[in-house]
Length: 223
Ligand code: BTN
Image 1: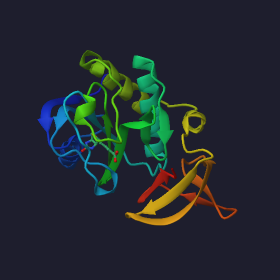
Image 2 (image 1 turned 45 degrees about the vertical axis):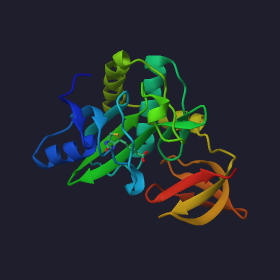
Image 3 (image 1 turned 90 degrees about the vertical axis):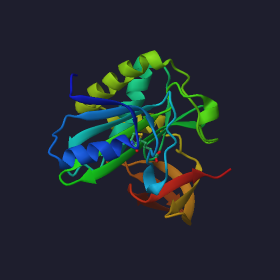
């Protein structure tokens, strides 16, 4: 799919740039990507380390009250990676992608007026030594980064059929003991029991099933 693209060498954050463009009137579909970010942003106000060799790209959407956007995006990225380099990633709720037990992709959705900026960071060809311990690289060639970005646009602006089935099949938390952490504080623990049709996480706590929506909740497997 051919969409308008702004390609930068270095920027602070592609999400920040695209939010500014949206405020200036840019309309979807539209994307901004960079080879490196100096101030990459993650969920829950964390930073996202963004060295050379990664893919840092933000896409603009109309806000349509679709609560599943971030969960759907995880499937779109997973499909793109599988198609372009044959690697099958796991999904850690809500929208992190893991490869061999370590994080290779993070996704951050941010609202701006009636639009949503969806930022995706993938450790595509980055050196492991440039990444935090919890992360790894997909070990791909920088030459293929553009093919991945094009496929992301196809998937994200396409129909993305059967996404929930794929999400469930790739759900790495299923059946695992997890801790629920809200705003940095442990608020509960239980066993992950799957994903609702909207992309929410079902957790069994003391024999009772509760549903966690997206937002300020993160989950860690108990060692
Ligand atoms: C997370 O893992 O918490 C989400 C990370 C999202 C990183 C991407 S990289 C492109 C876009 N620009 C940013 O500053 N953040 C997102």
